[in-house]
Amino acid sequence: MNMNIVKKWRFILPSTVIVLIALSNLSGPEDWSEINQRDAQEVGYWSTKEYEGYIPSNVEKYILDHLVELGYISENNPKGCTIWKDPSATNLDIHKSIHSYSTDLDNYIDTIKKFQPVTLELIDEETHTACDALKLHPDGMSAMFPSGQLSLSSSGWVEPLYPPLRSHKFCYENRHVMSLDYLVHDFEAMCHKLKPTSKKIFVDMGASLSFHASQQPPALELLNLYEKFGFHFDHIYAFEITFTEPKSVFEQLLPEKYFASYHWINTGVSHIRGHKMNPLHSILEKFSEDDFIVVKLDIDTSSIEVPLVEQLLEGGPDGMYHKLIDQFYFEHHVHLGELAKYW
Image (cartoon, rainbow, N blue to C red; front, side, top):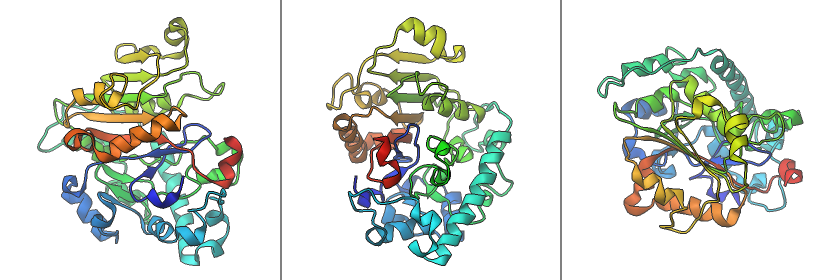
């Protein structure tokens, strides 16, 4: 794909050997907390108006502003790792900021791994005191990244959009190609959006539980991460077109802890608006904006995926998708030299 759409799409989750994009936090600036707006101003982030509810870090904005010079609007598989390895690809300040962010990210990942699982107490809609347990740093998420290179969304801080659109450690060692250890989740900010009656919903389109031998399926890795921070999903809708014996799914592949919430739907999804196999219509529209909804789209079929993403971008009936979806993970094939051999 051409990279000129990255102003609206957040590239984050390479859960397979292909890049995953997450269009996260679809609602606009009017939903931002005063705290997030103040934090953005303090660290020198850019105007919310330009990016419609998403504020890129200054390095991310540099990349967006120099797509042509960096070669990222080309379909000839430009190199994504060059900005990490060659200071002259950008400039010394940008190169230094990128590697300062790398150090911050290592510290963040280490903190996440050491974080002790919590159980969210009853959410107080006015004070949200239960959310304090999810704070990774006394001064908030941004303090975890003194480089100032996080980007900001209506659901909190997120990792910036940098090529190669996955862990930058892949640029040095291929074993990191499927690592998720570069995603930044602001669970404290997500918690502040919850209400006492909020249901937690996970919609997984492309839900294969058989994944590259010993590699944990991406969805299970995400579910485990959310659970560690007290987000236990009430319903998990898992669509998968490849037939899998139910006996295999429930006796071998699916952890028992998900039995009460897991809906295994062993058929493909449809991109047709209003079709009952289009989960945006048949599932999402049954919930409210008070609920916490995560959507993952990874079916390796662009003729279905792209129309679904376009429907999300358009917002659906009365803009409801923008109000409903809190986090969106999307696999999308892009022209990038280091990844070309994988597809």
